[in-house]
Each structure stands twice: as C-alpha cells, then as structure tokens.
Length: 209
Ligand code: GRF
Image 1 (cartoon, protein in one colour):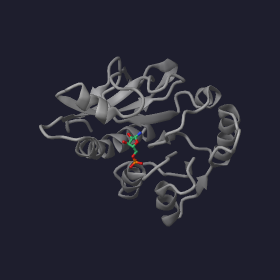
Image 2: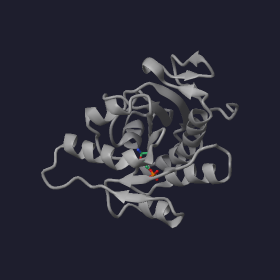
Image 3: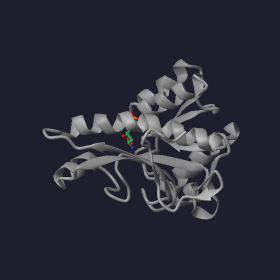
Image 4: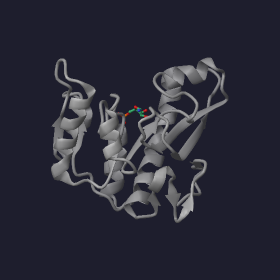
C-alpha cells in the first residue's frame, strides 16, 4: 500500500523480479488515485487499486473497504510503503503480525511526519530508517531492522531524505525476503528472526544476509 512516488515499491519489485527475494507483489492499493505507485504496478501487470476515502467516510468504514479489496488476493503480508494515511484499529488488528511499515527515522525517535526536518533541527549526528511491524500505536510497533546515515554539514531536508531513502530501498526488501523465506515472524508481538527474539532492532551494516 502506497500513497506517493512508490520508490520503495520499485525496490521491492526489483528484488522480486531479480530473484533476490522469493516473494511476489499481488496487488498495490493506494489512497491517492494519481499515485505513481499505482502506475508502477499496472505497468508490470500487477493489479493497481485506487481506494481513496470517500467524502465523510469514517476511518473504520474505509478500513473495511480496504480489507474487502485485499481479501480476494489472499496476501500473506501487507507492506506499507509510504502509505500516508492512518489505518483503523480494526484493520491493523486484523492484520496483526502480517503488516510491516517503513519509517524514515531511527525509531523510537521522530514518530510521525517531517522526520528529516526534526533530525536536522535537533542537531543529530545520525539519522536513518526503520522497518517495523504495525500495531495500532502509530510508528510504535516492534522494530526489526534499521539503517543509519550520517547527517553531513550543509545538509538540508532534501539531501538528508535522499540519503535515507537510498537505505530504505535496501532494508525493506531485505526484511520482506526474511518473512517470505519463513525466517522472520512476529508471534505475540515479538519479532523472531531465525528462531531468536529481537528485543532491539538489528542494524544493517552490510553484513546481514
Ligand atoms: C519514504 O521515505 C517512507 O519511509 C515514507 O514515505 C516515503 C515514501 O517514499 N513513509 P516512496 O513513495 O516509497 O518513494
């Protein structure tokens, strides 16, 4: 599910197509009818469904429509890749342990929006991104994998966002590959990788296979 440019979706599609991960994108859903993510999907023959909320529709009712749309695809995993709308608690609970998100900060720092600006304003020496399982607490679900980037002198939001996004494109397919291979699960709210509980997120330093 994506709202915008879909560069993370592009990275995931590349990883699937090249065989780097053993997964298949079966549908792409967007809350924005004009999202580039939708055309990225339809261009390669993947069903692309615009499902914007209707005027006056509640979050709960939108969530029910999303679940109904997802149903026929029987997806094992829902991947939020720049999906910029808060999902209903019922939607999140239905997909408990089967939905992941990528967030452009080193969670738990900078939940929510404008993460790059906030990292710059705080004068932080490093920033990054986090893949986490989704729970009803916004950006608060258990983290699996993070990548760090330096904040460089002269950085502005655009420069820092680009440096982080490049790392997102590496760690998101990696985590999806682990799940597809049956190596990563999240029973009872604790991610387990290769049978070991992750009490803190792993850091991708290039050595993780
Ligand atoms: C990414 O930075 C993601 O972390 C954030 O929104 C951005 C989406 O980028 N939630 P894209 O649409 O995948 O290019």
